[in-house]
Image (cartoon, rainbow over all chains, first blue to last red; front, side, top):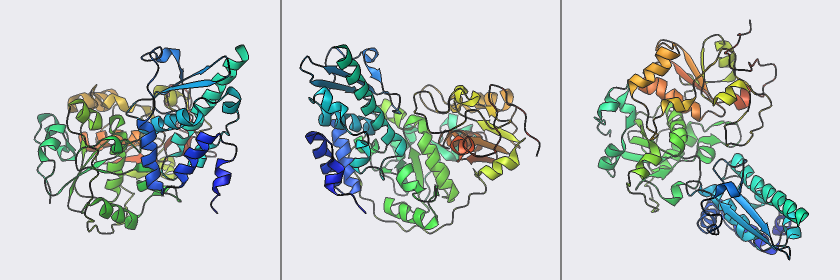
Length: 153
Length: 299
């Protein structure tokens, strides 16, 4: 039985819900193309982070060198920055999804994102489980950084 | 239709120079009838970002594995896959990929299970081709479906199962994982995630020869003399030995399987594709922790 779109988007912030809907509206092969587009659309790092992976957190769950940095503003708005190599387009695509799906949310909203968002993209058949775990790892590290930033501010 | 061999002098020294081509050879023969180029990567999207012109993607996860049985596809599914990719039984297939050709070697090994007559690896893989500034395109080819016969998979010669390894204990086993995985300090590659293996260590009696020792800086295979120095002089392997190689999921050990069988000409080398993910988790199967090869338990 296939889950309805409402189930797939339950509890997701609007931008992420829209991404999940977009993926599920496509046949599996085309979902990979959409993931490729997210990979190409990953925004560049801001100048202060460019070339400075040591200032960012390494996502150990990913098979490629992927780094994440989260800033939280005084008004609790989050800013997510990801770095992932062009030779790892799948991982880069996941970073692109999180950047677009979570960008500009409040700290509270980011922390409320369900941990199983990766499995809702409908990519399990096309992408190895190991790689899907990279997405979960990225999300977990984003949340951890949000917690740290909001606890100290 | 079979393409000519690559006359490159480094390749000519290997036991089976017909199993390998250089980037220069591929560039020269690209587009010729009877040559099919296959890219097989760890990253399922990498081919889509740009590939050798005319090449087709074969994905290890979705196309070479059976989704249900935790096995490779069967003869009918392999024939259907080849047909879809436009590959005929008498085509010369050249396989290349990312990450030092791990998945390319793995794909070549699966092609070997089906006895595809002429399948070769691109020495240096995708990285070398790109580093030399050779053409990559995002144009997707539309292969004309080819006739490919249903050939039953023949696992015996190059594939070992857990039971085969148990029966082989005391024989030559090569663990190609990182030293930390061998000792049991960690159950996965540095920089790679935990993969749910409950025990760290190695198969009793296995010698540690990390796969990367066979690779040169540019991702090509080391020349034959250097490989002999490692596997034969240093590790004491003899071409007459019956050898089983393993890693974590069977991809890195495909690389070593290729080195021993195609480059050094060992006639009896098997890849244990269940590797540590199976062995490390199996009930009542012996392991050894630490840097020593360890005692082989009496049977």
